[in-house]
Image 1: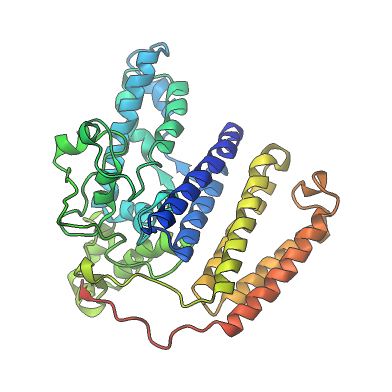
Image 2: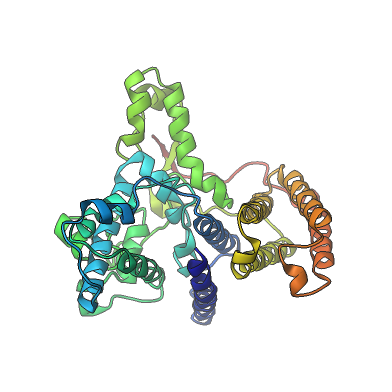
Length: 426
């Protein structure tokens, strides 16, 4: 995990610069693909995902190392050809997991966050899950384990494979000619994120489009069918934690409410969107019917609140950077305490972005938690090593944040009636 933290210290600034370039380019050509709160929600989701990953908060049922030691038919040396083959096998495993995420109710809960943005830009690439409590990824690498791919090869290739999926989340790059047959392109991935009926559940390849063409899930982007982005059951919140578990909560409610005892257990493994008949009739859920009439989620907030939300995100990124830099010195179990505080910070300010009534209370809890930690330890997770005034800066921020949130909670108002959204019942 220490190595991964060091890699992230390099990768995060690169991602931020690329997003800034995309935003400036969109403004320059008068085709902006970023919206303030949507972008903050995307970046916040990325922070929560990174905190979860570096803290190892995923139960790995079977690890690749175990499979390599117990089922490998042979053991091979790490050469450039082996790295190439392992990259292809990881991509195939990624396609299969992606396919399951779009086809099975339980796995869709782990993936829905990635599709929840109603925009399509580099920021939405960072909408990654924290709801994947159990990891089945190793199972999909059984072919690699059988032929004896060294674990160090898999460990090296996996993050590279993940980071290479960032660049094609953009609307500013058109079709790329013959490259469309060799790699997944922005055009192909725009189709994947679209909610148009013709585009749903298509183009699930991650690096190579071969799997989609082979297994019949490929769809070309059509000139007369512009993409509309999001999910058919709109999240209608900026809170990445809530978005991560919305689908799971609906499944749990349906399993509890249905009188069909078999459905209580099978609903989790049914096709995505499937619901018991009795629950569908009694508790209908509104979904988008015609994507062309989509009303994008927005909060009626002042410019000052938008600026404050960006300040809160920036502070969240600073907290994350400190976590990565001081990963070894903080150590366990204090890393969990710090990670929990970052999660609370994000939860609190994203609830304010929703103008939720609980926002001031959550901010109060955050403020008291932070001040207690400073009082108890006399430090802020190693900040005193950087500046002797560190604890005073953090204390001042916490108090200012509480005052600012109280102000916005009392001056910003939610619309008395939500916007009318064209829907059908499911």
